Length: 207
Image (cartoon, rainbow, N blue to C red):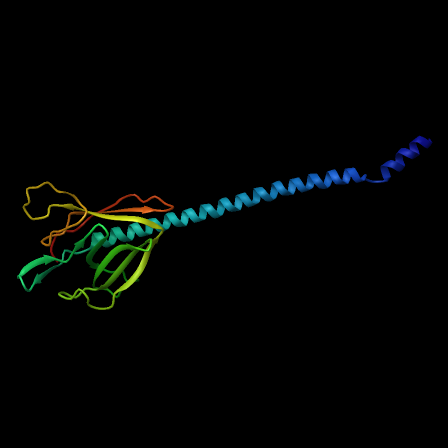
């Protein structure tokens, strides 16, 4: 009878200090594991959102460039000194210039001279109203299309002259003043994303 009473007293006395320390330690380990898993999940979520935003940004820039180049116009002017007709177009490896309508969100309608090149690790668009015979007409504006650009190269495909017997090929610079190239290609090297070559066909008809 006394032995039973002593056992009941021990059960009612609660946990020992060692048992409490073990329980606290185990609880701490469980919390650490849960917190680490939660933080890893949140980091993965944030990383996924950043990657999705970067991908959407690249897609938007590609669609914008493709649309502007495809809508660009073969505009001709007359050289008053030589009385020669020339196409308003400039193509170099580091920059392209052409005439095209501007989206309403960036301009007020009409035709604009557009220049697309790289500066300070950014792909930049510069534009000003197109006025025949005046390449410096109006105020030139600028916007950043893409950040994190480490290298850029334009290329141009087509014959240099009408009736040229030489096969069309890609060129780093477009030297013909009589016509525009048939195709334009943009190759970008980005620091954190991949950029597939952008190839666009240009309209040939005079405007």
